[in-house]
Image 1: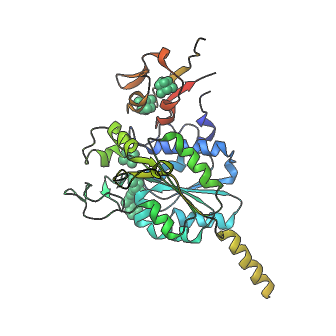
Image 2: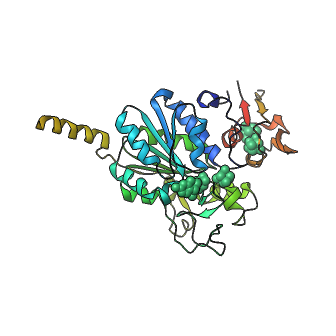
Image 3: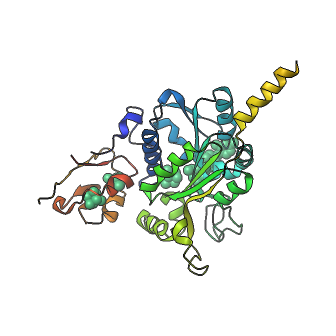
Length: 272
Length: 65
Ligand SMILES: Cc1ncc(C[n+]2csc(CCOP(=O)(O)OP(=O)(O)O)c2C)c(N)n1
Ligand code: SF4
Ligand code: SF4
Ligand code: SF4
Ligand SMILES: [Mg+2]
């Protein structure tokens, strides 16, 4: 058997707009496999995004989708979930969308612990607009707006999510395609706000400027830096230098927002 | 026992020639032919699905029984 992606794709939309080798397509396929594993019904699933190359993803998937304003996926998604708590709400977008203009919405969605899943495709750059640096561009790396190297320290998205209160945080990479759907499945099953960061590649605006000769070199880098959390337990600090942990990084059971909000409604009704 | 070989289908109208499937096939089954990926040595294929999983463009299918 070959996996049948067509059943979750809107007909006639391929080829997609992403550049050759862009990892966003690999992530989208992972999401589709996760939807299939969980047998998510199209009419009970909403995918909500902001703006950017990564945020184009919902346009290809045949379910309820919302392509909103830059950085605002969390706000719109919260509205969907509050109005229709029975829906599976999945957010997706890029590092720029989620941690720059949408950083505020991101941290507060984490803090609220509302039962949604956020897939953030971190390619360390504003891909769509030509490669300006994002809060995730590593220090010293080049972007169109930092041609002599980025002086800023970069965010660690997973740590940011944990610090802000997300109750499920995982990380994968576009190279480790087989793991992407498994992380997304666990994230969707978790009751609370789940964040899945996928380290991604943008050969067009980031790779080129940062001396990656090809998308293959970018994929090899993802392969080399990723260390599964379990394997990391047996490694020394020295061995972990320059590595990035992958897998489920954090999981906690905490009161979920929709359930807590329902209690407020009950209290308010009783007060009359 | 004879190994069952899959059928590998490359959908050229979706393939963007990124080389990912070719480079990361553990058995060197695929090659680039002009712009597109193409099957070079099907006999060596172990149906690991890595090429299908990693293709960003839905352009390669490994059809096993
Ligand atoms: C309010 C507003 N400001 C700026 C933009 C321009 N803009 C479009 S996409 C984007 C950045 C996208 O980067 P990211 O979210 O990392 O996605 P990528 O393209 O890298 O996948 C920016 C700044 C916009 N569309 N709207
Ligand atoms: S510009 Fe970068 S992020 Fe956008 S589609 Fe091309 S490779 Fe992907
Ligand atoms: S299934 Fe595995 S062995 Fe066969 S062509 Fe694809 S990557 Fe190579
Ligand atoms: S990975 Fe997909 S798009 Fe890239 S060369 Fe292979 S078949 Fe073509
Ligand atoms: Mg980006």
